[in-house]
Image (cartoon, rainbow, N blue to C red):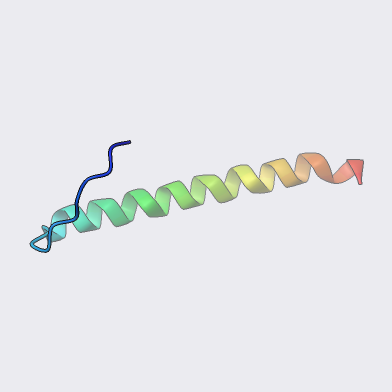
Length: 44
């Protein structure tokens, strides 16, 4: 993933899209984390 310089005149549409992508990525990461924790719990 290339690091792009953030322009001050950023388009609101791009910002919404970026926030939505971040939100989806966070949800996916939390889901995977919970699944991993649940699968490891019986070992403890």
